[in-house]
Amino acid sequence: MIVILEPDLGGQEAAIAAVRTVAARYPGVEVKPYEFRGTTHRFAEVHLLGPTAAVPTDAFEQLPGVRQVVRVSAKYRLIGRHGLGNETVGFEHNGVRIDDRTVHVFAGLCAVDTPAHVDVMMAALAREGVVTTRMGAYKPRSSPYDFQGLGKACLPWVFDSAGKHGIKLIAMEATDASHLDEIWDALEHAGHPTGVMVQIGTRNAQNYELLKQVGRQQEFPVLFKRGMGITLEESLNACEYVASEGNTRIVFCLRGVKSHLGDPHRNLVDFAHVPVVRRQTRLPVCIDPSHSVGTGLCAPDGLPDIFHAAAQGIVAGASAVLVDFHPQPARALCDGGQALTLDMLGPLLDHVRRVRAAYEGSVAEVARQGLTVRAQA
Ligand code: PEP
Ligand code: MN
Image (cartoon, rainbow, N blue to C red; front, top):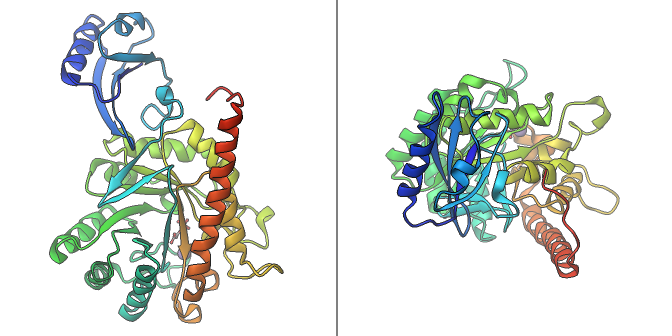
């Protein structure tokens, strides 16, 4: 059971204490308060755990400051949308706000290789006014003989370059809990010139110990990539693992699913799930068209398949896009075939803006006509 308090409630502590007092009447019921920050509001919820089946909701509904009481199954207790209706939700990290009001493009190297490539990438982003990037230092590879990433050795110069070019947030995968400490130590040593959002890759989507570790820390928000061979529900449950340990600053990333039906693309594009994740959860949604289609090839209209796939996710309301770039794709040590060249950065950003405008236009039109919104089940 979740007792949802009024947003921005003054006297929140007193309201939580009142919930505790009522809950104490029911043996075995545990009380856990949580706070979430939306774009314009602060939300507090008190979760009642344990034998709540016989606990009446009206005992809490009458308390001052209580907006709503919802009975939830254990599923998506923390990441679920529950009583939030159409509220915009998300979080801010190092000055970058990720929610459903804008789209951030995390364009960058799949795998960090040389200081020159990193610097030229960051400089290109800065010229376009982009403050978000992706930089892989720890690479999970299908073959143990493939390049595994430069690891902590590259962090000092990656972070220096980010600081030099005003990059505020880097999406960077961690494949082991020790990487969180390495990233934190390198940021500390460099004087925090930038911020990091820790990426959990598709191969670790059900590595529950790693999920718990990233959930236990508050330094980094988490970019969780959908498991490529599991159901959406299983992936969302994995995010619930992160949240249940305390870290609710999670972005859910769709990156395609493994199926020969996606051939000749690397994966089958699953961006039709953007609205599903937005309806079922409060998580901002990211899309990764690069790892979905896995090729830099263009359609006869001149647009790369990556642009086309990105459009599918953006027009469905995605909040972020992860795209592989490389100054010299032929020399990339990982996923060069799907990397876009830097001359495509400006066109990609224009494309994203145009598609986002189309999406916003449709949303505004539906609202203007007052079309009935179906249940938010
Ligand atoms: C990546 O983004 O670098 C990556 C390895 O993606 P995924 O985990 O989705 O395969
Ligand atoms: Mn890759």
